Length: 275
Image 1 (spheres, rainbow, N blue to C red):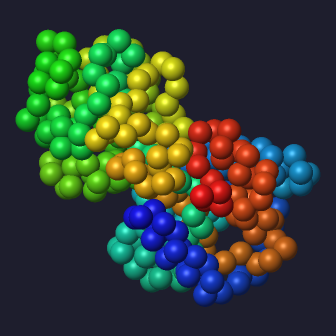
Image 2 (cartoon, rainbow, N blue to C red):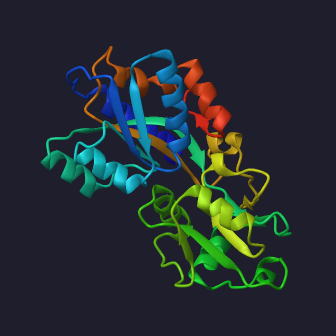
């Protein structure tokens, strides 16, 4: 329900947005490493279909995506969370009117090494692991091994989602390791038998094991139905609503097309138009 409410709010933002002058043939995108695979695939497809258009994609985190949009150094800020009040305020002060485009839905699987026999945790158990109350896998039905916690960096929208839904803003233990991307979380977990981490649904493959949470597996179906408890919307933010017919509008609208939906599904995320 949280995601669908967010989509509804974003829809009203789009409805009342004001058009801006036509964009040129260059589009700069900065922000989330979670949304990165979507925009990179969109960019590759769009440039193939529109020769002469140049689209560049940087993945510096959701917070930096917001900053780049506020400072007008990009046309699209990719974010795996909604903009914070302070970011909106800073944008307005600089004459930027952020408009949210919800391009996909995403679950946030809790991942462990494939050799770990643990199959299910509750949200409370995950929080207790990351606060340091649970320190050994044998406390949750696993082997007698110390737990190694892996987290996204605090500038990440993935971290923000985890902090809000799982941690409920309780402090993560001081011995937690922080890494700079979803791919880095996966790499650390796949190479470390005792590790636990979290990443976007599109980053889960057979090199790691995604746990069920509250007895619900993280799948496109459970995320779309709202039964998987750790889920979110993924956003592209623009300054105002792009002018119809511009390349920026064509790119930002790609998620609404059958090809855009096909790309999103092929990467492992969930199109907003199908559920």
